[in-house]
Length: 559
Image 1 (cartoon, helix red, strand yellow):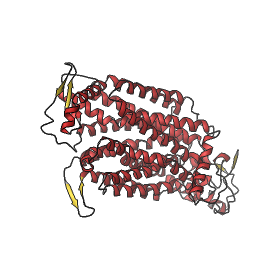
Image 2 (cartoon, helix red, strand yellow):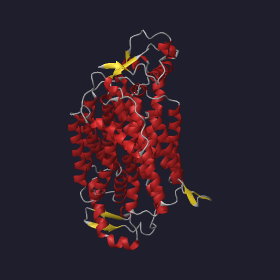
Image 3 (cartoon, helix red, strand yellow):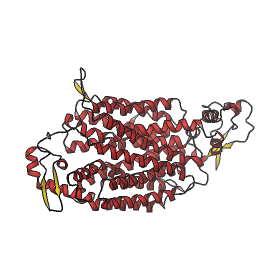
Image 4 (tube, rainbow, N blue to C red):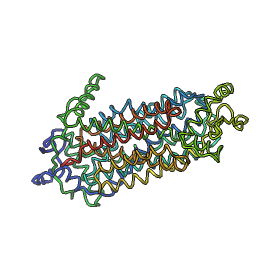
């Protein structure tokens, strides 16, 4: 059933074409109105702005992995504190996902993005001056809290400027910026963090080292993105869903003018109709007290867990939890696995072991040499104790004991090199998927990617060289990442406008919860049950593949 987008609204001015005497034109369906606005320069600028949102998220969330080795001495971190710092941004994102979805669906996509990005930049800059571990940890929590908005709301914002034929491809191509941001960050870390200079600041009383410069630079994309979004309009579909037909048509005219180079007045749409399902209920007084806000958030969330949205919402949350747990939970351990295999290969060039055999060997050497290491107060056993597995004894490598201090802030360069390789593979896979989605059904493409991911993570069990580990882990992460973004595209296609941002935020919140759970579980099981852990991750991905068949197809009238 179609109905006019709140025609005759008392709070919204009449569309310009109606004032010019063109009200006799029949109303145009919103999907056709989007098509008539063209596809060109505006969408390129929009993609750049949305892409920078993802770059900002990558820098703030994943940069911590590079900071920990460099900052561990200054903050005197033990293993549990390192683990908390690694997870704290995800915890912040979990805590705020619901809030940002609510704000984006009620106050606007663009406004929510700008506010969140500015606050994220402030917290990022402030954290570069933190002089204690707990203050730094608190500020990184708020980084995750605020940067959650750009990581999820941006897909709803982007998709609502596109028609059905271009929407999925746009989401996939913008996802390339995730890898671009990762490569930029890893290259920057490689360039900056190894520097050994330090500057004593008069206030606050701390030494400003290179890793703090890295924190500052990671905050800059948030500032740049907020500036870009300031010059972009609000989503026309969101405006229509709130009954602001005049403002929405003005946005479409602006898009038309930028894309075609013709005057906005030539835009051939005077009025627009939308599916009744897409129009929000009559506006009510904005909530002011905390109780009213929580009640409003629940009312905004409740329809997602009712028919006809219940099945998709539930499946999206389960699949995102499982996929994030498998590929992102594994990814946070990759630098450590790269390091272990590299060190073992360097010290035992004539012996070839799989990655799990290396992990088990190093864990066994840790147990045998534990008393000696505790007495010297050195905890990085992978750099000190190596195992010659073919001879069946622990080789005490005294080369490290003579030259290593109890705390080291160095980062193995192979970590950056291998991470760059993963990023390049992801860019290639994301770009190919962005073009293939135009010809292959999203569900089918998602199934193919998940099967490939499952095979790769299972095959890692037999990887006995660093190159093979990098290749398999790169394909696994890239294919699983494509599936995550494909799922977000399916949600965008099938959830009504006024619930869309909330649905994406809830599904991604489930994903981040999965990352937190998996990273902690792998920390417990990796040394003692490495093979079983990797096969379990492969099984989880296969379960996601089965669940994908239960996802709905594209709606007959994609709005």
